[in-house]
Length: 118
Image (cartoon, rainbow, N blue to C red; front, side, top):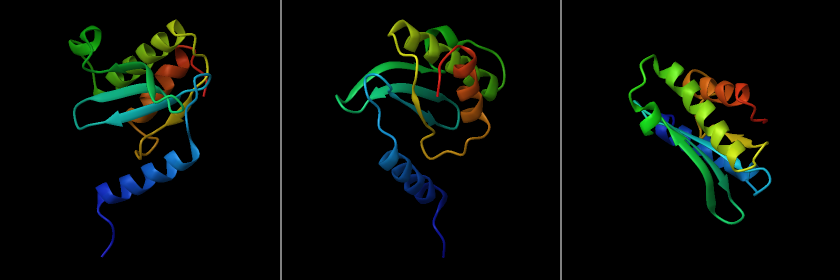
């Protein structure tokens, strides 16, 4: 019998984290996707600090109408603006075990449009 969906996701997440670590110059842009919400954080793994965070539950985005993918793109733009305010230009993208598809892809493209490089 094969791995369950959550076990597979956890295994992929560990494999990604082995390779990608965030520094203060180039933090890790971590994405967490639940069934209804999406969250993004810029993390400095060396010091163990979250430098910027945005989610679909933020007050600015909570009342937004649109599909989950459209809201994810707005979260991407919000995290990019917060990163720019913290003088962060480049990040290492961590999809958190999710496929680069759908909402995760929309978030990444939204962040790129707002000027974040990865």
